[in-house]
Image (tube, rainbow, N blue to C red):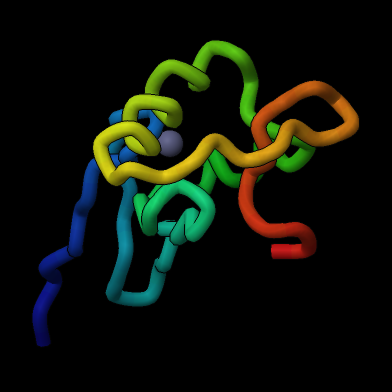
Length: 84
Ligand SMILES: [Zn+2]
């Protein structure tokens, strides 16, 4: 029996989140080069990333040489591929 938790730092908001065992709060952001965000980022940016986080996401894209995703109807950077 292990009580060890697997804690990670969210790539977007830098808060810690748990990813195993029993709780899995990490969400892979394929659009942004497979960075991983926490549950609270994922759930609160369903309609696109709040402008506050844009510089962080843009920096990840730049580092990985990815192009900036098309903005959604709310003029925000999409959270991920549609329906994901
Ligand atoms: Zn987060």
